Length: 405
Ligand code: ASP
Image 1 (cartoon, rainbow, N blue to C red):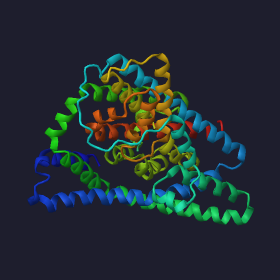
Image 2 (tube, rainbow, N blue to C red):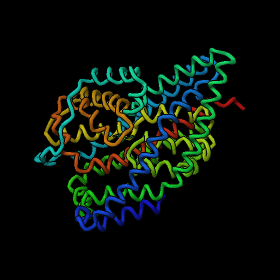
Image 3 (spheres, rainbow, N blue to C red):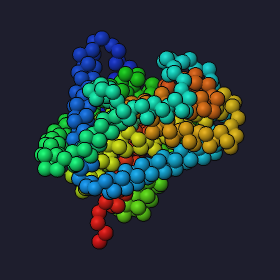
Image 4 (cartoon, rainbow, N blue to C red):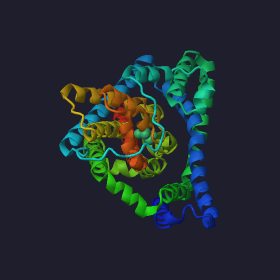
């Protein structure tokens, strides 16, 4: 996978200037196709995987008390780590001040997302928990709704005694079959990852153009990257060793495939099949933990996104010369956490929910235009941290599920 990614960087970086040249049209389209097939395969397995693993996950947790306990701990852990990462982001952006003296003279290239108040955004999340049409939710990738429906269905099956068992077994077998399918997808991953990376860098104009864009926003990008690094390399590993009692280095080694996929697809949801497989097969986590905690984490737990939203919003305020007081920082802290919970696990979803944080502190929504040119890159980095955070949460919860020795 790493060689696929490297080759992608090289091909996209070197030939980026010729990406639009019609003479190379065939090759450009072919490389694009390789990435698309990989991405589509991942998306193809993700819906049945979530449904099967959630149904089985909830039933294998056994009695209602255990389910409630696990659910409660999972959510508490996820919210706590998200709050922690936002606090880190706020601290760094105040310290580094990347937005001071940044130019606000950038044309808005894309249409701005609509403005939402914090409660509208929150209510939207709640609304998404109860989709009126399961197929529509599946088609649109509204994972939270699918999770709730599967949990309810699985929970009811446990009440049906022997007949319910039969159906549960069916889902269990489905789960296993999908896991085998995932193995096949992973086998194709190096080629797919090559296609995704080469297309992204190439269509952005090649290595030089990307470097140029990054330099324009270097201080802001570095603040985000520094925050993400501290969270990923210091905060989360400490939590893993203290609460999950695992060696962080060895544990990270189990997830190289998942983390690389997160970086190249920029989607926690598309990465989920690979994360789940790594958790089960390589890290040896229980089916209950990987089947239940990971899918939930993919949609609700986004430490990287939360940190990035806080940095981005305060960066915009600094660039526009908007002074923020203590109360406003607290608002950013809370709304960025909410915005990350509400963000879909798809590329650049964080940009959309950021509107809510901006409105909450009275910052201009057009400020988002300042960030657009390099968001695709930061999106990949934060998605990788999101997935890493999910895997650590799963290890922590996994430990609570094991009988004390
Ligand atoms: N792409 C991110 C994810 O899937 C969400 C975001 O921050 O835009 O985890």
